[in-house]
Image (cartoon, rainbow, N blue to C red; front, side):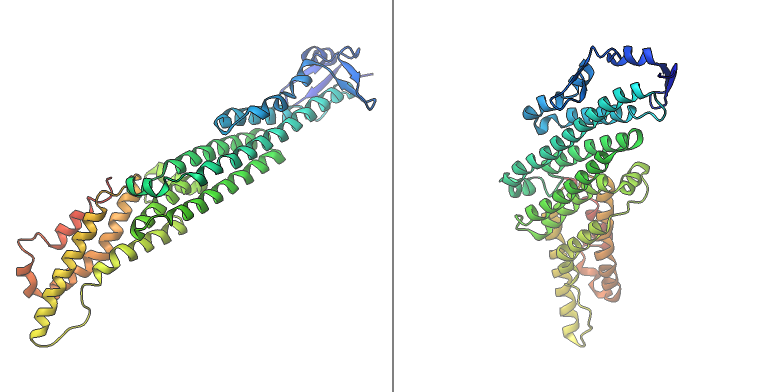
Length: 349
C-alpha cells in the first residue's frame, strides 16, 4: 500500500497520493492508462500525449523560430528535471517516470531541431555573394551576417545557462557543444570571406572588427572587461590580427625614415627626401583609412593608440636628430603632434 504522503523535493512541496493523481490526471484506477502494442501500460493523459507536440511542429520550424524553440527546449528540460523525485511512492514513481521519460525524449528531439537549424543557416551565409561589396562599403565594420550569427549564439548561450543552472542534463552539454561548433564555423567563415577583399589592410580591419565582436560572446572575460569599461584585453587571435594590420598598413610608412647616417652633402638630401616620402606615405594611408569603421569605442581607441605608438616616436626621433629639417615641416602642419591628432580621427566610419 502506498504511504499516506510522499516527498517531491524537485517540485518543492509535499503531496499525498490523491494530489498526485489529481495533478497529473492519471488516476490509479487506470482510466487514463492502457496497454501499448507490447503489452506495456502507457499513460494516456493529456499531459503525456501533449508531450509529443515537438514531432508535430518540427517539420515546419525554421531558423527564424530559433528563440521559440530555445524557449521550448528550456521549458522541457526544466520540466523533465522536475519529474525526478528522490523519495516517492511506487505508484507516483511510475507516473513520474513516464512523464519524465517522455519529456526527455522531447528534449532530445528539440536539440535535433536546434542542430538542424544551425546547419540550415549556413547555406545562405555561404551563398551570399555580397560579402566583398559589403566589406568595402562598410569600411571593414562588423558584417550583418556576423551580427545575425552572434545573435543566434547569444540566444543559445542564454538557454544553455538557464538549463545548466536549473536542470543540467546531457542535452545541456550537447547545446554547449553546438554553441562551440557554431562559433568555430563563424570564425572559419569570416576568414574565408575576408580573402575576397583585395586590400590587405581592409581585410585585417574587417577580421579584427568581426573577430572581436565574436570574442565578446565566446570569451566571457572580454565581455566582462567591456561592461566594466576597464582597459580592453584582446584575445590572442585579435592581438595577432592587430599586429598584422599594423605591419601591412603602417610598416611601409615608418620604413621611409632611414636608419643609417650618410656623410657629406648627400646627408641633407637623403634626409629631406625621406621626410617628404614619410609625409606622403602617412597622409596617403590616413586618407585611405579615415572613413573605415571600428564600431567598438574601446577597440577603436586601442587601435589608434597602437598606430601612434608604432609611427610617431620614430618620426619624432628622426626630427630631433636632424634639426635642419624643421624648416621643411611647414608651420607645424607635419609635426608629430599634428600627425598624432590626425590618427585620433581614424575609423569613425
